[in-house]
Length: 376
Length: 83
Image 1 (cartoon, chains in turn cyan, green):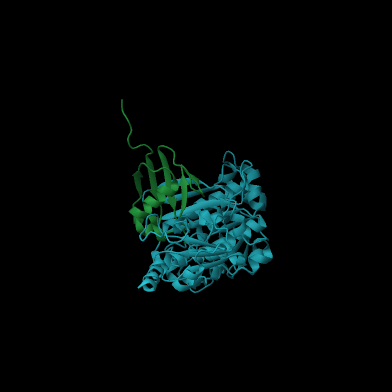
Image 2 (cartoon, rainbow over the protein chains, first blue to last red):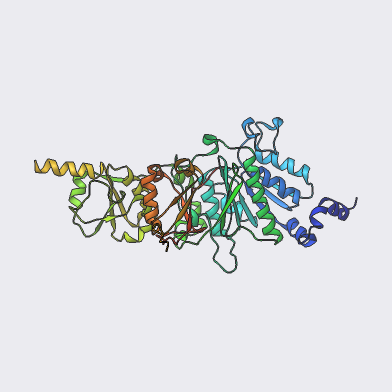
């Protein structure tokens, strides 16, 4: 068969589709898409993009195939166990559709290589499995102005969104408009800890591939500025609109050079070094105008503090009220020093070196005890 | 004449891990804004205090304290990282 006949035959069902046709197919063939992560989400994304005729697909993954991957990572088989996923995936995709080309990036996406790899593509698809990679990809795509298709799963639920694509003259949103900062380790379960239903990444990966195809082909409406949540247990979806947040841009490195110097692994996984002061040091800092004292306990939590002036912002609302913290030094307290340490971590991350953030060790309990000792 | 004593009916949906703490949904009333709502939920479900989530009122994300309209829906969505 001649090339044109093969083209007509292979893509026939798409070419005859009303609203798709040859023009959309040509756009797919000319597209240059990077898929980061060739795991549970990456496999269905890669498979459907290759099948649909996305002309050039880059695959980033540094992992090898394991037996416990096979219940959801359907590009692989038992013969491939121990082999690099990026290489195996490319091989399977080439067999599926020899008309397309694949570029293998058998490496982990890091702050050092992200800009270089991503800049070679038109669209990025995030199928990774950790927050360090997700924030890195988000930030790099914002800086490089690349459309980003986001998908993530947890147990029986999945999320899909399209970032950095402005819709009807509204500003484009990104992942940090939704979740400005990564959660701390232990706050969110990953698949290895919490498990995942094998078919769920196929469904969410299918949604992601669909968003990519719509975006490239110029058909339908994409999930730009929206987050879709799918629940596999009741088959329900829930979509929300994401509002841009003015503070978001300040959380993203200002330049590609700054991105390269941001260690996303430690930013997401390590606990930040926070500065703590004891009750006596805290006592010395009271009634000082250059210091804002903040109680991060819940409203009406006992003991009520009336002995010195302070702000009261419960921990959960703290990051929404950082504009209230105007003094160069912020001292945070709670009942025992645990929540204030978390608050200090969030504020240190938010303000960087612009402000001195201190947490009172032992909390207001320790300070009260000190007062009792002083008067007895 | 019927008088609605419990105005501001608010339907709250919890996603992901949050639904393990608070159930999939709950209906509340007499809360005027999102700060009050979140404070109320923290009291009712103390384990929520350790969780990170985005808040959407009538399917629109919010970033500051927001007034709750009558018969609104509020969604609490945690970040997912799995892939």
